[in-house]
Image 1: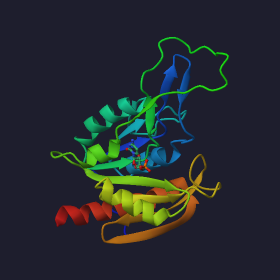
Image 2 (image 1 turned 90 degrees about the vertical axis):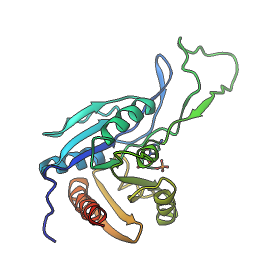
Image 3 (image 1 turned 120 degrees about the vertical axis):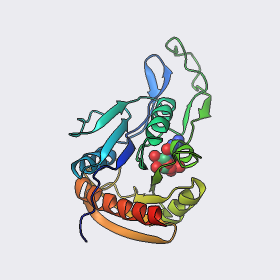
Image 4 (image 1 turned 180 degrees about the vertical axis):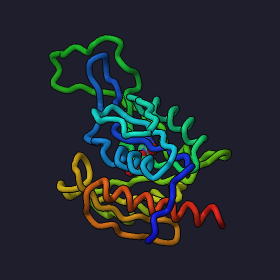
Length: 224
Ligand code: C5P
């Protein structure tokens, strides 16, 4: 397949985990490394896209030519993502957003008590990609990721529909050699009337193929 050009296309990408404070010194987070999102940002910029990368707390260098917006919590990522998305032709949600945050962040460090159990009250975070896909004006072509340990394709198709996405990359994370926190990954790309399996390979190689599929589908939808 010939390489499609990203020249002049505005793209925003969320990447990495979010971190939800419990008190001034503790937080809830997850194992996302941000590598897939950073790889997508790096390659898209190399291919000529105008890339904004909304990054959760990860110790990764900013890829050349990429505009980076650092955020910590899901609420911060939500605000930054909505702003960037409305100025983008394409939005890719790669971030592993924490599903819940503290109902109230403790102002002072929580003290250990004599109790053997501690209950934290959590509330649901906004679904960032669903709110991007629900934009009534300046809605970008919206691409999500689904990381699953079982029923991968079924769950991914459910998310494609429920979150009203244009495309989703289904990622099997049951295999410790791929997915979260590794250099390699394999995905199946799914859109409303098709799918394509991309075999396990380095995240940078995979990023090229994913971007090619996204651009192809974006251009089809644009023309329609
Ligand atoms: O529902 P689930 O978290 O599995 O969906 C994954 C997709 O949704 C990813 O694209 C992720 O970036 C996005 N997401 C989001 N905001 C959330 C939860 C997930 O943007 N609060």
